[in-house]
Length: 128
Image (cartoon, rainbow, N blue to C red):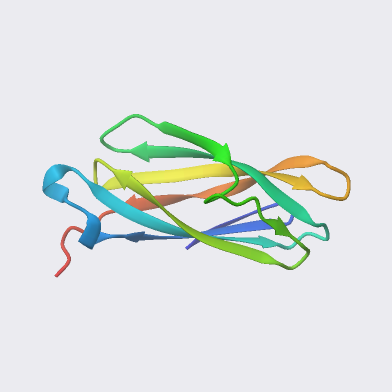
């Protein structure tokens, strides 16, 4: 698990290689990642947008942007967390991701970026 803390917003990511959904001989590797966003700030915040940089050893860097996370724009009071699971397909068994969440402090409308820590995706192709 990797973790980053920005302006009181802690983002933790845990990645899992999904061998049962992958086809290495067809250059198809599936990874899931679980993200927990914990509000350690004294303010109520809302996650508005996300921006990911996805690096696949077989391709160039891809940028993925959009509103919220998995269809939600969660509001987090002080001390609250939001956890979700998403996935990424790679053409190689080696890659990494990092990014930012675009957040807003609801008391004054101030927007800021919370860092998503870089995490590696490495296929375990030698499983039993």
